[in-house]
Length: 116
Image (tube, rainbow, N blue to C red):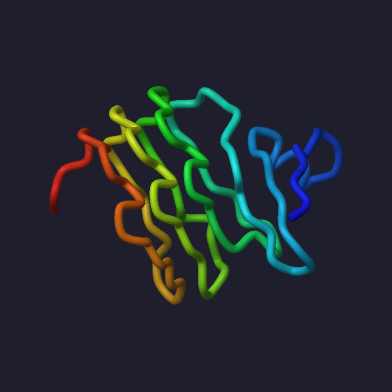
């Protein structure tokens, strides 16, 4: 699998500047988050279909995960993608018409998330 860090430049590159992405053809995956923001928005980019295992693991900066820009009909958040993000407190979801599949244990160890 090809994996590379997207650098600044074009519009899509700017949106993904804090992410390492990789994939084949039309299916691109977020492999790693490189930033330190408290509020992280997952950008809508054609072809990005998932957040992979460990992409945000043990990130202590993130408090808000914003998924509202996702428009892909079938998006996946893999097992352990947000493992032990202990300060994550809020997840913002897209309005409707978007199906996000959360693999079991995608948020394991995220002690800041309330069961609601």
